[in-house]
Length: 89
Image 1: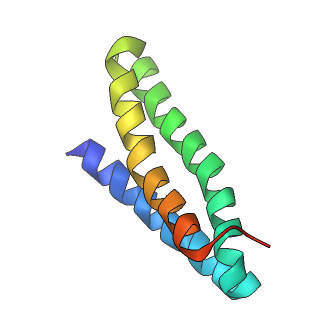
Image 2: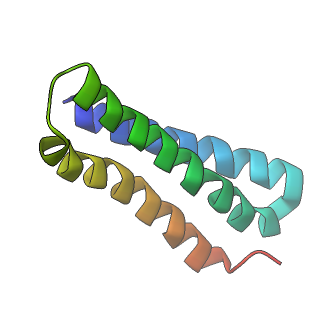
Image 3: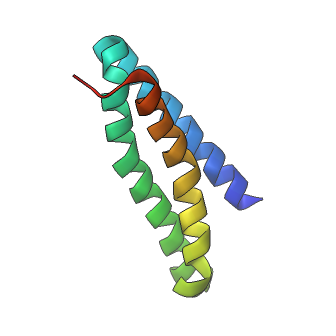
């Protein structure tokens, strides 16, 4: 359940990045918003993995597949946005 909530948080962060990019740069800014989002989301997913290892007591081997899932699903959606709107100019 926690994994789904974190993935949902990733989609919420993506929506915020896209909204800010749209307001600041118009439709051409959407791709730039994705390029801001991806490293930010990577850091959030890595922090979640660190919490699982350091605080919850899981091993890196146990947390790595969850990290990949948590990062990849929202990041793939973000890259789909870039594909649909085209690269930033």
